[in-house]
Amino acid sequence: MAAAALLRGAAPGCGGPAWSWRLRAAPRRHLAHSGCCQGADSASGATWACFLLGERALVRVRGPDSAPFLLGLLTNELPLPGPAVGEASTSARAGYAHFLNVQGRTLYDVILYGLPERSSEQPTFLLECDSSVVDALQRHLLLHKIRRKVTVEPCPELRVWAVLPCAQREAGGAGPLRKKTVCAPVLTRDPRTYRMGWRLLSQDEGSALVPGGRLGDLQDYHRHRYQQGVPEGVHDLPPGVALPLESNLAFMNGISFTKGCYIGQELTARTHHMGVIRKRLFPVQFSGAVPGGGIAPGASVLTESGQAAGKYRAGLGDVGLALLRSEKIKGPLHIRTSESGLVALTASVPDWWPTATK
Image (tube, rainbow, N blue to C red; front, side, top):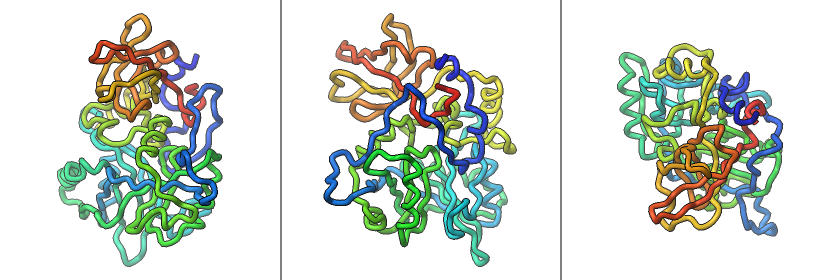
């Protein structure tokens, strides 16, 4: 039944605004959540791991037409500038979305930050994207600017940090972080899933801004991300190749099925209303020795009988992501390496996915 449920689209409400953050009950079979301060010294008092994401960069879009301009290009509604419930009026709002091409395939995955509006300033948004596509994203925006009153420019003065709890805890336990952190231009929960903690944009050292924070190893961040099944950047979401719904965009609160038109909407909406998504990106873990050079992106994933189950997408060490047919994930899987060896792997269903898909 779990495999059949995964063929359907997101559960009701999963395609709503990106800031509709809520907890979901954990399923019986799921990928366990692990803290990101593996080996942290408890005596040091560190409770948060701060990761400087050098592979992420920011593009600023500002001007009186910035909101309607972006609305016609993004898969999601905008995170309207203004306070969320229980937050200060100076809080930024964050949302997740993709830019698509006309064929409905992902070009760029972005976390969108809506900065609080002030009477003396123009509406401003920051787009967090893979640093390798900053120039391409700017060209894409300028191509569709036409006569809109917007300015598109890089924002190199701010650095992107991910902030994750050092120990396993409920997502609600992250609440005090905002109250304790000071002097941060933008601090907001990661809009994709509560398992990804917080996003911090700052000119300063992130770990110095977070009480109880320590500088984390970037590899720990990526391992955690892969274990939670969260794709990020061009390696996980190849431009012009990845399909948004197969990439679990709806599960990550990254698409609205009720908003107006945007580039690439037709195929995406048709797939959603057909109600069948046969393949998805799943977190996978290898058992046994992995070749020194890693697993090649696009390597075929096979069932025990040799049938095609999908393709490996990207990863780090013994964890990664694979695009797999949902009905094939329960059985034994393997990849045949260039050395003619077999590497076994296991696909899992993250505990933060909607319960209807378990």
